[in-house]
Length: 412
Image (tube, rainbow, N blue to C red; front, side, top):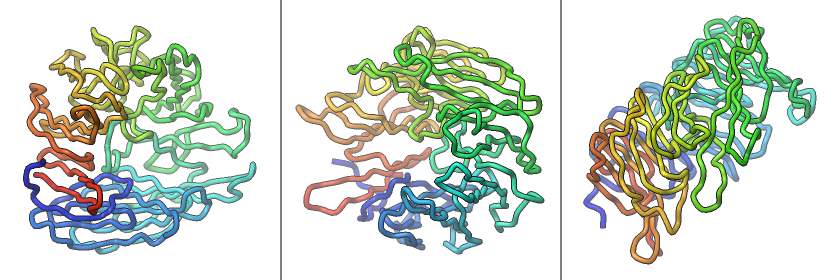
């Protein structure tokens, strides 16, 4: 039984996480985004989904603004985008495009012709998040990428000096669909080009970094290739490795956290695994390992301070490493992820590490949320339910009971 919540609301949750902006708690339900007063739990405004019958609904936060976008699955129809004030629900501006990305104070909109054919051509325009006005003199050729370093959850990732852009038409030949870098200040695409391996492409300064996760699946090897944006020359090419699952002897095959396009790491450094299966921090700016840990494990989350490591990619003991040095701060036994191991949902926020997963309860399993002290690893709170969001001083939990409506509990 959970301790009393600050407030609760009933409703079927959507795919996105709950987040807090100022005095508002943003609750994404199945077909709407609801802003709730953090103290009273009273609804302040509501934005209902406009695309029904199989549409998807997402949002990103920048300061006091919310970028909300929605589209239809497996469709070439344009995506609707709307920028909303978190405090009032007032719409600043709205529009549509085939693809939407949010970085820092910018909303990037990509529009395409010939979708679904080999002759597809796309251009991207950068717009100011506050009023939607274009900031480039003309659109840039290509489709902006959305792979970034860092687990940002619902926050818009910071906007770097250069961002990856996919330049080619949809042909089966990788050399005909290269990646490049676009200067965010001007919209100019740098001359350097990198191949597409259908995995990740992201920037580290003026380096374009391409990943290939299919080089040696038995060894969980991930190829990294860095190309200079200004010159097109290869700066380095190195392998790193991914973690392994416990029981099926399979590779996790990705470097991301809970979201596919968000790499675990900070700045130009990403978390990966060595050939000896120990966690490492790898610097994309130099193509070298910053440190390798002493014990085996698989990175599962991280921020600018810490790296959370699991004994395996799906279960096992948990350890927290210092991101700067790789030194282990603490380790705890497996909280009980078996007999139903799953992808953990985790947050490193403030002085807390919050973990949500299927936990053993007697002879069966059920959803639970565990809050640990970041400094000591001591368990400070535990809730029954699914983790829907967390901050430095709050946790949102979804509680489901047979025959009763789903309930969202806000603790903080």
